[in-house]
Length: 515
Image 1: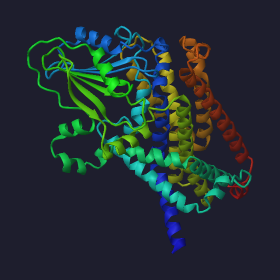
Image 2: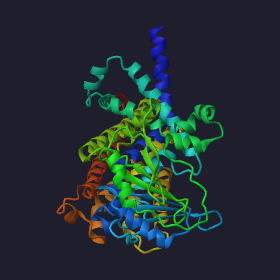
Image 3: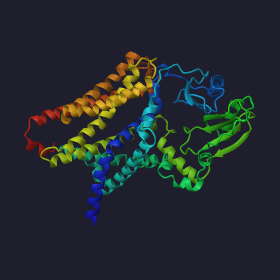
Image 4: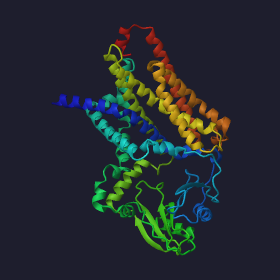
């Protein structure tokens, strides 16, 4: 019975991991970049890499909006902090007014539009990791399925490796190539197992109502507005009265909110019906100063400044959800902790990648000649594990090479990303997967190592400037590019060396060595 159960778990681990492994690799890699989401955006807007925060950001934004969008039905103001150095504003117009929605990026000090190149920055990679940039909710369902499959793989992997500590310390590079990949996969899986479990479980929490909506339907029925008000502190805005009235000064409201939160910092301001007697101002606490990000907010009367309603984030269910969400997002983390999370994310990405490679190598040993399915899986490994980093590098290159004032340049950066990824996927079809591995890793090495050079030639935000001024977050993008390029250069050299060695040896010797 024990042997049969363990064999069943082995089958589930191998095949379940293979089917979703490529998707999980993409999710983990782009999710890891999300820890540096704001730093990536600052790197991709070198014109304002040193922009400073301002205590008057909310008032400056409201002054600008009062001139630029006085008839809007809602202003959503995302206040800057030490990492997000611009004020992000979302304007929602009334029905029938076009455009229905627009986004502005303002200078915190005076509310002027930011003078910098248009880019999606780190937001593109952040959203990709949970919706794959697929319209609608299909991408989010796929990522949810992959997350559940990863939980199964973690549990079954623990069952398979009964000698957990032995497997962790076992490293046998001289036994065979197959054994080496298995040892690396096991070590990476065990080394950051708590991180894998934490990030997978908590990753399902933000979208849990999409996957399991029945509790919401049972409690609130067809009243989603009540749910949003109760759980997310997002009340239904009142109807406009049609009577003009001046908006209350926002600075005293922010000060009152900070006092009630014992110094907690406001993170966003929502103004409904600006310029109307029925205006309201909702101040919500930032997520960056706490682990458990329960909804804490205060709703003020927009004309008198009187407090209408307070959300204090109490309740066991809200705290449980907010704690899981906060641990997944890690917005509270300082620079050293974010670096640790990035290293854990890269370890998780490598664990998935080594598992995919190990599956290919193990089955290649069993076949006299590689089948079409095996070659297809090997090509998919290449397209994902090397092709995705190539695509990300192309995204950064496009940011520096496209003219700064080009209309629609942010969309062209995304086009460059997907075009490079498509070429990487077609490359093994044209060259053969065995040679394509080395060639594509060499291309990735060149793209990443040359990126800081391109940055230095096209902007003033290069390493000579960012390191000298202590802008370590922005400098980390260039340093990470050099590290990634060095890694791909090493892998390319080893791949070419192994390929030439296989050419010079008979088939029987190769099979005995696991190559």
